[in-house]
Amino acid sequence: MTDKAIFRAAMAQLGSAVCVIATDGPAGRYGITVSAVTSVSDDPPSLIVCVNRASGANAIIKQNQTLCVNVLSSEQQDISHTFASGQVPADQRFGAGAWTVSALGNPVLKDVAAWFDCRVDRAIEYGTHTVLFCKPAHIAVSETANCLIYHGRAYHRIQSYE
Image (cartoon, rainbow, N blue to C red; front, side):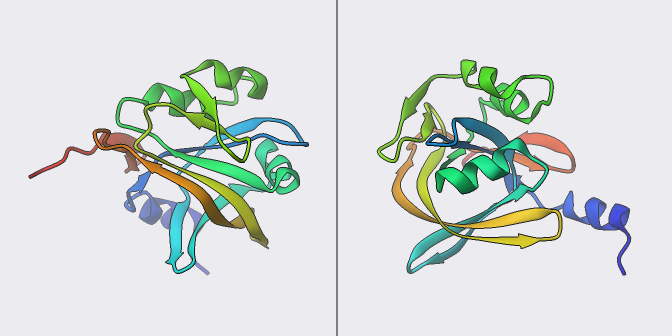
C-alpha cells in the first residue's frame, strides 16, 4: 500500500487548472474550488469532476444534477481562495467576482479562461470522493485569458508563447 504522504507529494507535482464548480437548482446554490477536473472524451464531449464527499457541495450537486466548471484565469487567485476557504460561508462566496446565470441555471463567473455548463450524467463513489461524469450543454472559451494553475502546493500563472 502506498503511503498517503508520498502519494500527496507526488500528486503535488501534477499541475492542474484551478476551477470553481458552481451549481444552483432545487437544492440551492453552492460553489467550491477544485483542481480535480479533466476531460473524458470529445465524443461525446464529457469531463469528470471529483468532489470530496465531506464537502457541502457534494449532496447539493447530486440533487441539482447540474454544475458549471469555471476555469479560473490567472487574475482570479483571490476567487479561488474565497471558494476554497472554510472561513467564508457558502452563501457569501458569490460576493467575490461578477457572476451571470447559465442556460442551465448555474452561476458563471465573468472573465474566466473557459467555462463548461454541464448536466451530471453519472456519479460514482470512490474512496473519499464522488467522481461526477458531466456532459457540457454549453461551453465558452476566452480569447485572451490564461488559466490559473496549481502545482507544488502553490498557484502559478501560465503565459502564452508564440
